Image (cartoon, rainbow, N blue to C red; front, side, top):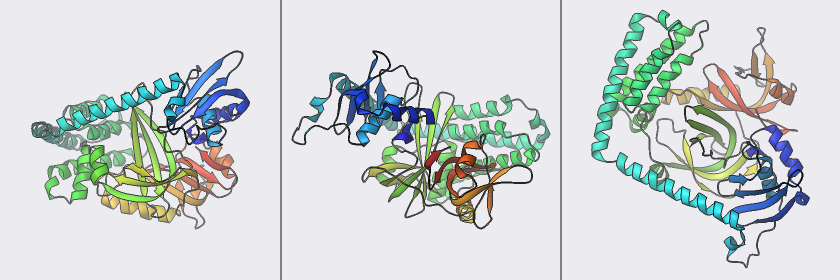
Length: 432
């Protein structure tokens, strides 16, 4: 439960509140848990959680989500300290206080409205005239991008060193207008390439990958089915969730939740949750999105393992997936990882199938921290193979390892490995 905490301070504070003496009028059923928590002075905070989400509500003024009261309530529930209604009581919902019932009903209504809007949007998107119009827009937008890329190379890369952000932003905006949103994000990201020694080569590499994607899209009918799906996804065509659930590849395994990272872009926050199959060793990526005023999915907690069946989106290297069905509750556990060489072999095989991969999950067993003569931090396995780390504040990871081996999970990108979580035989799971 503490894996849901927004930070270490919230997790610690929740432990101090998770005491039955601080709570009154607690209860739970199959979908919700609730109670009143005695705060400082005469303050009493009404707290409840939707167990199917999970989602939380509390009357306290905290801006953290979930707050310490919601975390404490879940801790009490997980320890069996909140009584459930008798098994013979068939009207379990009736035992909920009115404020809990109203909140749960409101959530269900909003979920129904959201599902209705998605169905209407999907129906519109499948209209042949809509499909044809978008195809023409994308074709025109990619033809313009192709010419823009050739112009950048023809004019030389030296001008890009001092070019304003507008150079790439204008090109990205035209792609947005052409309904190629995913490709627009890649073009906009070119402005963030660090101007370090060798950066022209890095920029030229990105231009080449974009040109390859444009050409692949223009000849998509000649591509194998999986690669064609990858190309369309990279351009910005989406696959409805219901199509993935009904026709996507299904894989059941005990999936270890190895890392999570949130990124904010304009008015949308994206959460990437990485999974690794204990039996198959297969990686998976579960995405969730939140607009302002809404919450991200918190059902997959780093450091736990869940027996589940995933449905994978189509692609040459299927990675993104949906949780189609769970078989039991999540339990704490340490993921099985690989050596550095094993990881590099996995990554090379993935890039051979999808050359546009910009990140890949790594789960490394028995690695230690080491510094090069230049002071750069690396992880080294028992065979002596190493990977560079990309981490702003390494002190927590350094303190955890203490020179000893850990299991480390993170995202691999061209500049190095960004750690997301670590497992220590004494400390357990540590979010980085």
